[in-house]
Length: 126
Image (cartoon, rainbow, N blue to C red):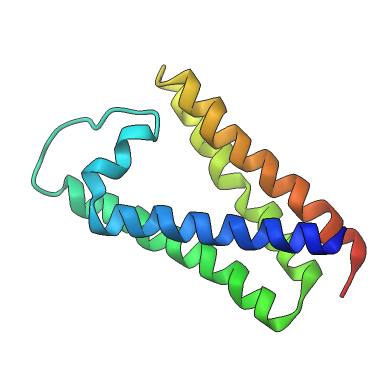
């Protein structure tokens, strides 16, 4: 079972790195599925979106570092803490009356995958 959780952790880490890279490379296209429209089309909007990309990349790399370190419980803790991000995204999208489909289909699903991946890692130790 731990191999499945480790595989899911790897998949989640690579996915968030890929999403972050998309925000860095093509930030306007990356926002299309997020669930909220951009407030305006100002010159600095892409730069603000790139900030999100850098943070996403760092979140994924953190999981990969702990995987390389062999710290299963650490990966579980990181995934639980980082699950706050998609939960927060979902709640903010719903509060702003954004895309319910994106809020639940992307952000809630991501949070649940992170939580369900973290549980066996936390229970299994090193």
